[in-house]
Image (cartoon, rainbow, N blue to C red; front, side, top):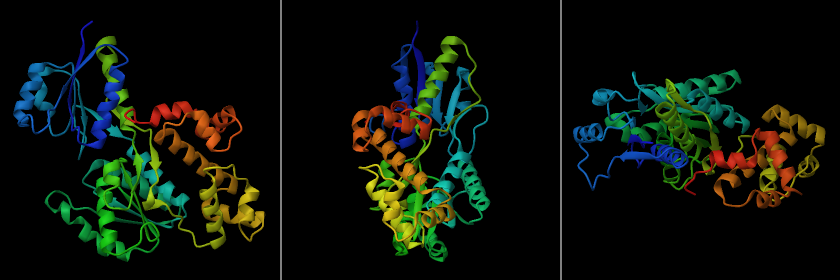
Length: 386
């Protein structure tokens, strides 16, 4: 049969767009023959919008996946489906490629709450739809928990570069310790710059979390930034599935495609617990330091403190709203998830590293906690380019 022809008018230099393309290509290798139209790099073509539009129309694709640098009106004569990754606002008349921004905001708040923070802040722009939606969900989760919420609005366009300086007095005035959720990694770099200007300590005084897990951006300033990975490769894979179903099977395309397979990558900028209780800090530190190589029991944790098991359990429940055992499981699961996605180690080897007596026992433990097997989790979240 004829090849499926898709024009990919997105920026390969952007982390999200690049992984989106990777997911589309990964699916294309599994099914009907595909053919792609890519934007050329700046040094090979004159990237004038009108010329790109004309070339795309002449190429006659079956479908277009693009960013909103282009308008759907540019391709009206093609009468083909157009999928858009919107930057500021949703695009009417197109299939919008989105994230579940409410889930992102809620996830960020719960992450900081789990670390014991009572002061939580947000940095973004209400003029950007996804930033606003993340802020609303973040604020709702914080206030529902009876905690304090703060926010500051970013400058955009010509004033973008001045944001770090403008953030300094705001950060200094916030009660410490404070956890700040940036609507994206790019916004997060402003926070990193600002805390360095203000001579504040990260993560002890200011803890920072971004979104996108752009490894280049997260590592720019010497303070590796924690971030929520949106798993855009999985979104790209789903996009390609929908395109094939539409072209080959005649199925209707969805009105929007929403990504929701998120995970938090913890780096130095949030590697802290905002807890005053020294005995609780000792217990948490012990769990983090020893969970990578051995199975820790509740009694092991209790022995590291000067408290009885009952008193330590009460403090865990009061401050963290979870038991000692639940914290041990949470930390171990986090380590396992990291090793599944960031290393090439076989599942059996990871089980051995984590002091499980068998791979079956390891898999059962992981599936019970995550509702997915270790192998399935690795397939879902590991970047195919590793």
